[in-house]
Image (cartoon, rainbow, N blue to C red; front, top):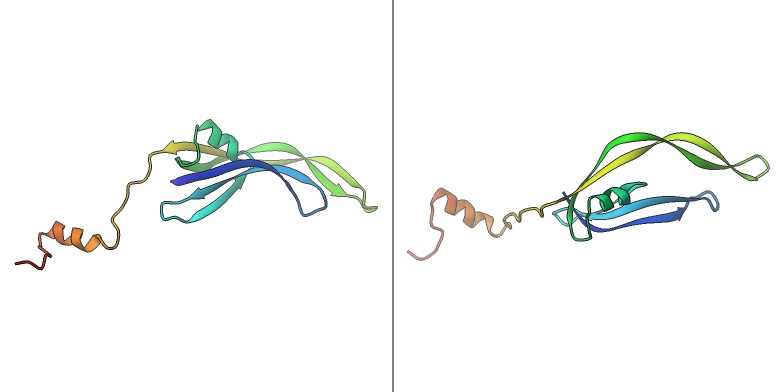
Length: 126
């Protein structure tokens, strides 16, 4: 389960000259606070279909692959730019809004809870 911080669908430049491609990515945070970015052409669509908004906790998974045809750019021997259609695969993403994770005990609270559970009194008063 991850917290959705934000999600964008963008055009970005590829390394090879001025070729551009559309993709989307999500900035996500796990319950421990670690942030990660997840990229995929259809991530924004899956998150949108789930009705998720920034701040929501979500489940996000690749649930399959689908065959797609895309334009691929290339340069010929003379340096001229061309495109051709190729068949490739794209990940299919599924997202759903989830309940926020329950807050666990902090390391400071843990010894007292363990002692309380086994029936010992840790107070210094006698």
